[in-house]
Length: 104
Image (cartoon, rainbow, N blue to C red; front, side, top):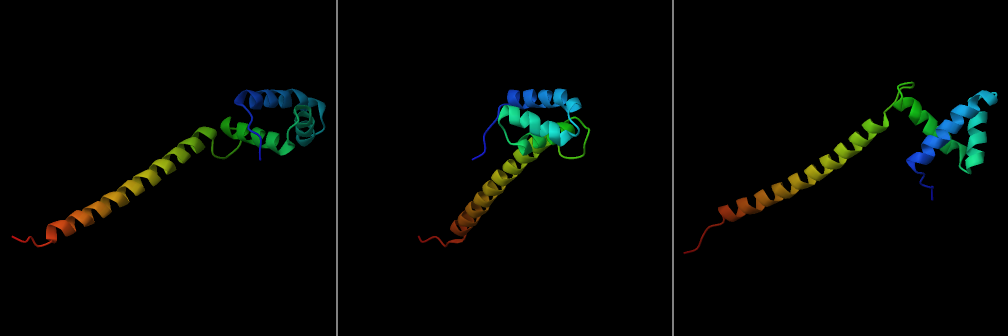
C-alpha cells in the first residue's frame, strides 16, 4: 500500500531536491540521493517534481487545481445522472398511475 505524504513533506522534499541538484551530474542522480535521504521511492519524488513543473507552468499538463476541479465535476455529473434516472423512473410510475382507469 502506498504511503501518504503530507503537503509539507512534499514541499520539503522538492526544496531539498532544488538544493541538491547542482551537486549531482544529472537530475535523476539528485532525485535518487534526496529520495534515499528521506526514505522514499525515487519515482514518488520524480512524480512530485513533474507535477510541480506543470503547476508552475514550466511543463505542459494538467495542473493540480484543474485535476481537482475535473474530479469534482465528474463526481457532480455522476450524481446528477443518478438523480435524473430516479426522476425518469418516478415520472414513468406516476404516468402509469394517471393512465390507470378508475373504478367507481
